[in-house]
Image (cartoon, rainbow, N blue to C red; front, side, top):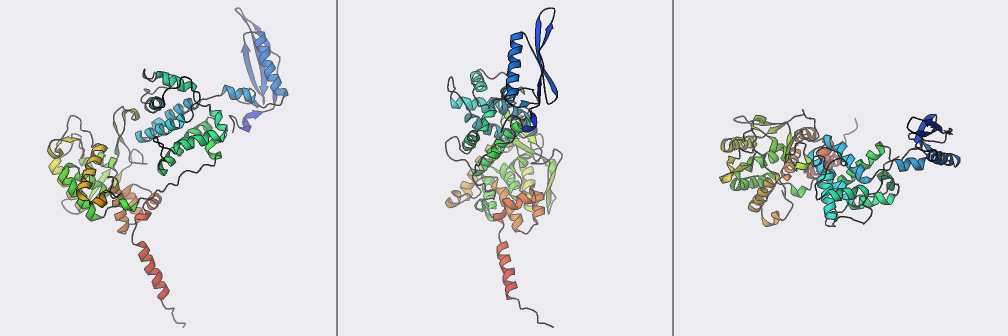
Length: 478
């Protein structure tokens, strides 16, 4: 691996005699040379400097050192000219990714690059505390919003972090250091560990590795690497099992008991959880629902029209500086929509919610509320229900509705598990996978891979078909 590929190097070098230019104020000396037919020139203030530079070029050419076609310099000199620190590279990578990704993705990239940078520090003199370095990286350097959209070199960091940023500018490895496989391996090992020193989850390691790979691939695009350093390292990440743990999936009776518990504790959230269980909505999609997105007939099935999602994120990760942001549906364009059927039970639940609690000023169904049982929306703010609120009351519902053994099991541990239960129910009811994937907002491939362990009954049906085939009598020959 090198800064330049073989196509960028040439041994076709021709040197010319330096020129002297006598001007009105001063005399300058210009060195001229050609690499692969391309002319280069460098002007010096004195004849001695020009002769010294000419001598370096002559020595390199005589010793058979290849020249870089882009800069015209001998390869070692071009490499020094193109030095780039990991810190500078990581900040630039954040900036090019920022406009095209969600706030949650931005936060994940920052966390990964922070972890990677802590393993790529050099020098101990004047080194700030690790916790301070982590804060400077995660909350400022790797947040384009925190830097007011400016380049890290031109932005002014907070007073308590200024000395940390200055130290980081001079004390991370150069990209050329990734020529050593040990550097890449060191980062990968660091990304597989949590802050408390324990092993990170396999899914976390996979996500971090993908981010680190992307950052190095950006170096390939800029031609600092001939190939991605990760691809040359034999490093095995923990096996990532994408399948849903079937132990988290509740059956219809358990789901109704949990919703009944919510109705007693905080009734304005019953329909919130009901949308996840009966229609497989993601929490962010539920928070985005308005009354105008609902089709609720007096009887029979209704429909939910999904047009976006409301993501709860930190201010430093959003474009507006707000703590939440409305986004398109997951993995969909800004204009994409999704229609999901609402069973009669969900229709009745939503109609009851609108009758008792109404909506927020902007029409949202599930907003921050006050008063007894959350009946009064906070019209001054009209914020969607915060994820912390839904998680807190779900934990209370589990305490009330489940047995002690169930409470200590993974069963419906998170509100999101209600979505898993709905998708599993649809599949086990015999709804075609293509239809389930459309309603749930998945691809068929992802759907079958993730929910493979939650589809019951198919093995028994297959056994019966095999048994029938084995016991059938062959037809008599005519």
